[in-house]
Amino acid sequence: ENDEGTGSSFTDLFLVKQDKKLVWSTPNLLETEEKINTATNEGSPMMNSSFTTLYFTRCGNEKAKRLGCHIYKSKKTGRNYSDPEIIDLGGDSTSRILHPTLSEDEMTIYFTADFPNGQGGTDIWYATRESSSEDFDRPKNMGPTINTPDNEGFPFLRSDTVLYFSSDGHVGMGGLDVFKTSKSGKEWGPPVNLGYPLNSN
Image 1: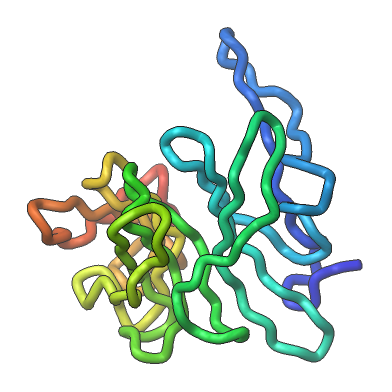
Image 2: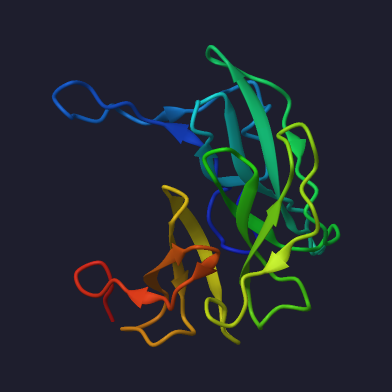
């Protein structure tokens, strides 16, 4: 069965390992117990800095019904994963909340969403919390320096100070380009297009 939205097979999470000679192994399903990989779409995975928690996106799929995407987390013990728990970031069952990336202490999550009170299209949002056992506070939009009336998404946080993301609203080379913004104090700077050869027409 194929996904009605894309016409392609549903997506699952896979794992590859790199050996000492920097050669990548053949991809294998992350797990086969249908805790993580289900009959719907899973994608955009990231592990926390201690590799004990997996964060990922799951999108519902039911014929003739608009179902959204939400971010889940699953604890990893050895090779086993716990039953995923949805992370409450607002929205409703039809909201598209996806592409998680977290700060090293897991107190801040950045993600893509199509919430109605954003800058337009999909935007990058963030939410904070006081401890890893608590829920995240109400999400905040990253604002017009990062987000445009078009689409921003696929955020990836590096060292808590550099955020890579894709946009078709900032001046680019064509379609979605990859940009980066750097944090100084509490402020994120203007996005920089990473240019050729990462971006193309």
